[in-house]
Image (cartoon, rainbow, N blue to C red; front, side):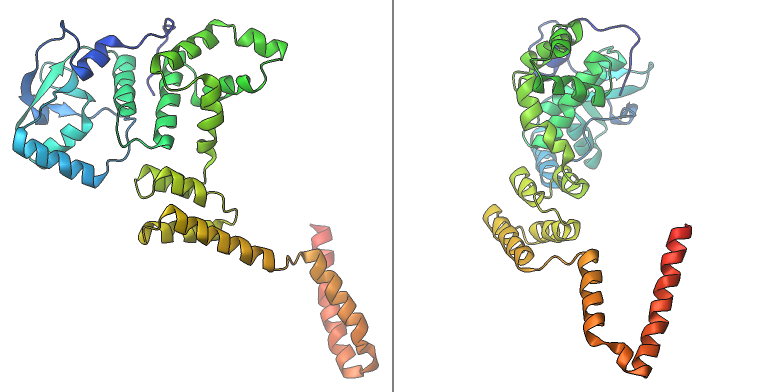
Length: 312
């Protein structure tokens, strides 16, 4: 994530970048055509996954109508540009081996370019809740010039509004700036974001990966995440993806797993030892010399194992 030594002012939507994205800036420069090969992707991008079917649909549309909305780029030198917004169009143009593409060229700073990319990411129709959560956290971290973990800690203060120290922090310039960002985005308050979105970051890694790759939707992923056993969770996730299970089918699978778990007795190491001791005592192996000799050999190995554990 880009960093800056200059503190940012209280948050305002970057109208220069947003207006360029949606064509509302009368003073924006007109689009012009440049070589596709002169455009390069930024070193770090907020968007990590593109649904193949969505990209194919865009490719078909461009074949029929051309690129209707120009890409946004910023100049690197006289002949090279860095993509700021429009990565799907850029990738579709590459697939179609287009020689030129329409662009709007603006001299954005690193922070401005990163922010516009994040904001464009938040406008995606196919954005799932986890991706949206991550994008908002990145935007907050960029604007407040702190890490995502520090943003989360700041937002979590809303869980303790009556503490005096929290009261002071929540009236600080940093907190007011955070609130203004949420107001500008118009989707959450800090508290609703904490309650409804931050828990998504604690989803198991395989669930988050399936979500970000578009393999499963959020409601199904959330249901599967309830399974505590990692192996059972992984198996159900794979089954849900490969067989395209509905949410009701997934819930039926979870109910079945819960019933199996309830009917299976929990055997702890302590119970195993206790049961073995009782069975050994009841068997009275010492009455049979041969069996007792075998038992003593095994008991000696156990003693050696215990001594080895104590010495370590």
